[in-house]
Each structure stands twice: as structure tokens, then as C-alpha cells.
Length: 140
View 1 (tube, one colour):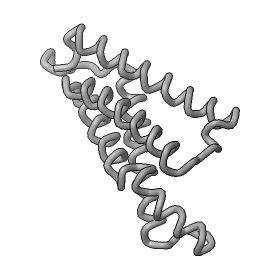
View 2 (cartoon, one colour):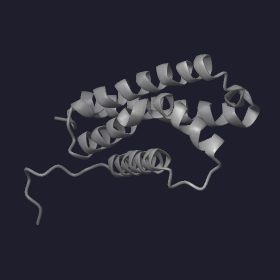
View 3 (cartoon, helix red, strand yellow):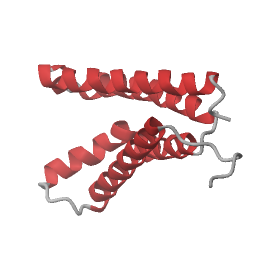
């Protein structure tokens, strides 16, 4: 029988935490593959990827924040809401910088915009969910 002091994690906390941890780890692995040159790409593509990696993930800061936010949410900490909200803001600024500095028109194709829009909708819903957890006193 579980102790009454232990909190039961809601189902969505498990799903969101797992997604953010896997997303952060896969991004860090991709950055490592690019930086070490272990990806099977042409030298021109590799040079381009290395130039864009700073903007793509702020040099690994965004994936690390994904992992920290996921752990915070999994541990049911109040900081999870603020980390998720901060990630949303950082992602918005980062995406804007990518568009301005790289002239990446592919993001404005119909498929690109669907992906970007869906990503923002999910991030906003996660922020709303963590805010509700915070207000209900689930996050401590």
C-alpha cells in the first residue's frame, strides 16, 4: 500500500515528461553527431549544419532545458510551469531569429507551417496544463 505522503502522478505528467526527455536527448545526440562529423553528409551540408546549430538549439541549451523541465514536471515541482513557459518563449525567439538570420523560407511552406503551428499549439496546451496543476496545488 502506498504511503499517503506520496503523490500520484497524473497520466499526462508521465506522457509530457517522457516526450520532453526523449526530445531533449535526441536533439543533443543530433548536435553531437553534427559536431563530431559522424553524420553521413557532404562536407558542404556538414558546414551548413554546424553554422546553423547555434540557432537551431542555442548550442544545446534548449534541449538541456527540455530535459530539466521534464524532470521538474515529473518531480511535480512548481518550477515546471515556469520552465515550460520559458521554453515556449525561448522557442519563439529562436524561431524568429532563424527566419531573420537564415532566410529559411522552408518554414513558410504549407507543411512547414503546419508543423510549426502544431508545435506551438502543443507547447501552449502544455503550459496551460502545468498552470492548472500549479493552481490546483498539485505542483509543490
